[in-house]
Image 1 (cartoon, rainbow, N blue to C red):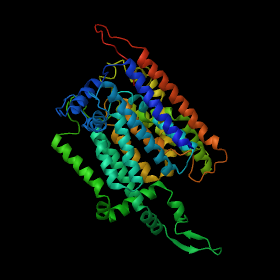
Image 2 (cartoon, rainbow, N blue to C red):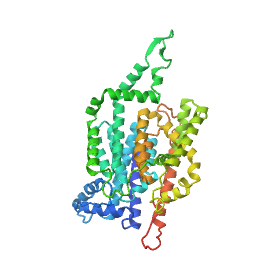
Image 3 (cartoon, one colour):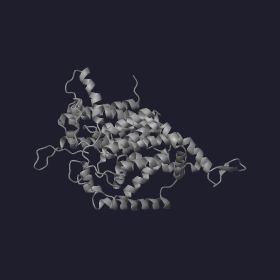
Image 4 (spheres, rainbow, N blue to C red):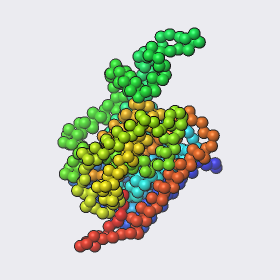
Length: 486
C-alpha cells in the first residue's frame, strides 16, 4: 500500500493526539479546571438526564456530540459507564482528526497546492500550541474548531445546506461561532457575485479607445484589470452589485439567513448570547485584543509569515522601505499606542490566577507599564504583515475576515489565548507563501519555513505538557493540586 505525504501527516495527528491524551489521563485522573463543570454535565447527558448546570455558559453541543459518539460504544462493546473522565477526553481525538481532515482539504482548495506543502502546513495548524493543548482536556475548543472548519470547507465545495447544518452545530459548541457562519456566508456571496463585480469594474472604468498598436487604454489612463486589483474599487463594486441583487442573494443563500434569524431569535428569547451565569461574561470594548491577536499570530507562524511578506514584496517589485510605507508604519505605531492607552482592559481574573501562562505573559511583557508601549512597533509590523499576506484572497475576503476577527475578540474582557484559536487557524490556512502564480524552483525552500514553524510549535507543546503534568504546585491554605496551562 502506498501512502502519500498527507496520509502520513493525518496518521501522525491521530497518533500524537491519542498518545498525548493517554499521557494526560495517566497523570491527571480527575477533572481539572473547567472540566469540573463540563464532565459532570456530559455524564448527566450520558444518563439521558438533561438538567443544566448554570455555571456553564455555552450551549450543549459538546455534550450532545459526546452522547452521539460514546453511547453507541456501550451497546456494541458491552461497556458500562462509558462516559468516564478518560473516555470523554478521548473524544477530542475525533475532533483533532476532523480538524486535520478539514484543514488539509481547505489548504488544497485555497492554496491549490499538494504534497509536502499541504502535509506540513496541516500539521503546523493542528499542532499549534493552543489548539494542541486545548484538545487534552474536555473543553469545547476542539469540537468548536472542528465544526467551524467543516462549515467553511463545505461552503467551498458549494454544499451550502450541509455547511449551514455544520454551522448550527458549531454554534451549539460556542455562541460566538455565529460570526464564523456569517464569515462563511459572506465569502459564498463574494464568490457568487465575482463575475458581476468584474463586469461592474469594467463598466466603471471602460476601454474607450485603442492605440495605433492595438492596445486598449482606459478613460482615466488605467486599465480595468489594474483597477480591479485596488481594494477600494473591489469593495465599492461588491457593495454596488450586492445592493442591486438582495432578493436573489437571500433566495440563493437562504440556509445561512435561516441560521442568522434563528440565532437572533435565541438571543431575544434568552435575553443575551450567554446562557447560564452571565455575571463574568459581560461584553466590553477591549480593542487591544486585536493587537494581542496580531502579536500572537505573528509569533507562532513567524517563519512562514516572513517568507510570505518577502515573496509578495519581490513579486510586486515594490521596495519595502519607502517614504509612504514608513509614514504608514509610523501612523500605525501611534495608533497602536493610542489603542493601548484608551482601550486596554485588565480583567480581575487575569492577575488572580497564576495557573495560566497568560498571567506571566501579561504581568511581565504585554501588560508591563514599560514593555506595553515598547511593543507598539511590533504590533504595527504585525498588522501590516497580516494585511499584505491576505492580499491574494481579495479585498472583500480581507475586509470580512478582519471584521469578524474584531467582532470575535474585542468584546472579550478577559485576555485568554483560547479565543484566538479559530481566528489564527483561519488566517494560517489562507496564508500563501507568495502570489498564486509564483514559480517554485526549489520545493524545499517552500516548506523550510513551515518545518521551522512546526519545530517551534512542537517545542512549545513539549514544554507546556511537561509543565502541566510534572510541575504541579499548591496554593497556600489549600491541598488541591494546581497545574500550569494555557
